[in-house]
Structures are given as structure tokens and as C-alpha cells.
Image (cartoon, rainbow, N blue to C red):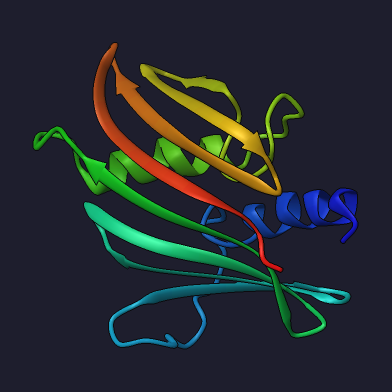
Length: 153
């Protein structure tokens, strides 16, 4: 497995799926899931999740139809006064950023837009990792998600 190729593919795939307002969902593979796909050369990325304010999902990367990498994630809006639209705007903007200071499984380590701050803390490398992302509004936690994953062998 070439980790540089996987890294570059993940950066592109993630910007062209959930993070992109223009991304088209694909036919759900499971009842009531929301699914996105992105393909490039020998790679296929598939993201599927359930829920909206509280959600759970999974991403898988295939190389020539063989699963080679995956991630599970689970997120929550923890402030009832905050809308999904607010979270989507700040989260999608953070996930579209170019960065090199962290592995490309979510967004950058830190990103600010208006009065929102995105934070991402990851342990490990692309082969095996776990982490937590947060969004703060005016310094108050309004959303967080936990995630873990790595290479599939």
C-alpha cells in the first residue's frame, strides 16, 4: 500500500463528497442511509452515514475493488439552540481546507470562520488512528465527533 497515494486520494475524495455542497448523494446501500462516492483511477471512496443532529457513519476506500482503508465516526450537536445548518456550514468549510499538519481523515488541526472554531485532535497515523473533532461557537462547545480507523489487511 502506497500511503502517499492514499493520502492524496483521501484529500481529494473528502473535498468532493460531504464537504462539497455540490456533491451528489448516491443510491443508499442500506435503509435510510446517506451515501457519497468518489472514484479516481484504481480508488473508490464510499461514505455512508445515518442521522443528522446525532449521527454515525463509516468511510471505506477500495483499491481495485478491495477494501484497503476505513474509518468509523459518531457525532453530536450538544447545544439545542444550534441548527444543523450552522454545523454544516462551519464543518464543511473546515473539511474543505488544504492542510499538511495532520493526517487527512477529517479537517485541519484548527480553523476559524467568523465566530466558529473547528478543532481536530488525532492520535496515530493513517494506518491506525483515533481522534475527536469539535466546533465551538463564541468559545462554547456546540458539536463534537469521535472517529477511529486505519488500514484494512
